[in-house]
Image 1 (cartoon, rainbow, N blue to C red):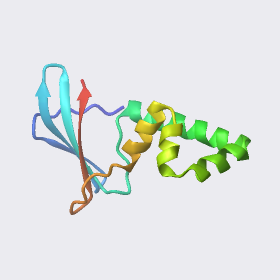
Image 2 (cartoon, helix red, strand yellow; image 1 turned 135 degrees about the vertical axis):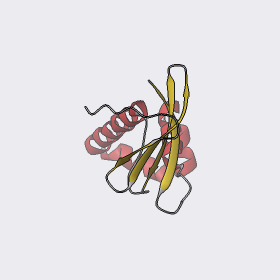
Image 3 (cartoon, rainbow, N blue to C red; image 1 turned 135 degrees about the horizontal axis):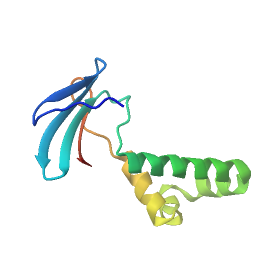
Length: 114
């Protein structure tokens, strides 16, 4: 693991396309701003792990029971959200939220514990 020190408002570049800027430091929390092209997904690790888990569950369910898949697609989008467990419905909604298009890619600012 590469460990770099940065002060507030300083940036780290990853390749030519990804910029990580220290936006704020408060106590033991560091806020990072990330600029990356829209083709690159940027998630907090816990969200990334949840997405992977939900995708694996969906693939296993759809792969093992074609009737479940048929029923899901016959319900329509509003009924599918109601049929999903609350956590899965929230993740499905979060997946539809996109960062605004900006020149050079999307921006994302999130808090990361130090």
